[in-house]
Length: 562
Image (cartoon, rainbow, N blue to C red; front, side, top):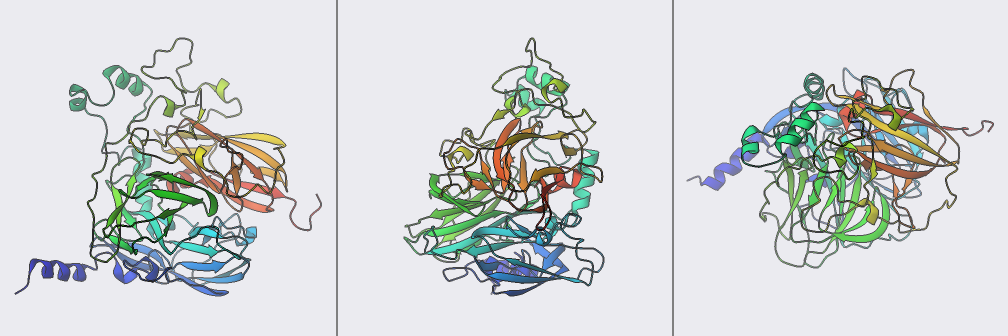
């Protein structure tokens, strides 16, 4: 007689639940050993192809690498050389791979149209570069929207000497978002109706029940065509949130032995989702960010934007399971995994918390609270006096009148969660800076958009053939100030460099990506030490696709006159 458990097991097998057939070894639940299985050595071969993936029992088209989703883990050692041959087995489109966060010659950076032409169907391109750093990184396509349909994977680089971060066991935790709707269909729907996927808007019933904004504030925000529930463009209404390619029902499980220091290498490989990460019952000791070690900070939760990586140490001592929760920032869903001493264990899954509402500060109005009646202030939200160098194109819906440095604040939606939340201001480099020169000049870059038309750009002009690049002299020290004139967060990523976040610490942390809060501003100091042309963009994939992208050019090149 078949039991209910047997029937469920049979059904899971028939549906291929969890896409086990496509999962690389490192991503499978319950993998034993100190470290996950990986490709390594000086010669590595990757093949990009089409495949059908199965997520939570439903099949959809994916772009895979070596037949797996996510792709294989690549593990290298600082100081070695590597040649990675990438063959494009897609019949009908170019591809590419960008080594996210790596210091490589710009010709090896993998951005079509900037670093190289891309890889045409049937062709092989060999990336050849020295490995100059250690830490947690990842790689992904920079062609079209392939990253959204599966072309991403982790990379770990072990240090040449002793690892400054001690641990007994490690797990790679790649977070991502998956939709059965084609990414170009996602984009088209957002162009037609930017609020298409927002199913958490304020309601009249909520107003009558005294929830959310007051009537006065709702009217004021409506006049500005602003929606305080517009936290994420693409939401859990169409996304399944994944841990290592596993849906929440699949429950990816990482093993531990009681008392071990377990290093969790979190990578946000999502196309459009900012995650809030916590493991109820365990303190999270943040020890590295974007691959670079930081002075340890113990928190209960942290927010990570697409493109960021966080290394965290946990020390479970009980013989019990712990739920790993990665909640979408708009609270429309979550990714879920488990840490446990044995397979088959699970812990309670906390319910998704109440969704946040954007505030006046998120609109770039500083610390103002309450309504919009502020005598003397230009309430058009589009006064060019606040940004004289930004042309008021149709893509500029707002100019933040009072953008604030918000790095010492908990990220959006985590202000009142009642436990310790990581802020950018808490991060300090474990090591002294290698360049102690003060910046020789300061430049400002505005992050602009028109949320009504799903238009995104830098300084009001979307990327295009006549867009002027951002130019740096080789080895100059520059302070870059990013001002977010929009009501959405933007994770801004610079290729080929690390920059020092100006966060009030004496040892400023190194990062390659910084999430600029809505209505906020961020400064970083950059030593433009890597000659060449580099991509600079928002890492929300559809924002980049819409035009929030530019090229950073560092000159002279090797052999050129200064």
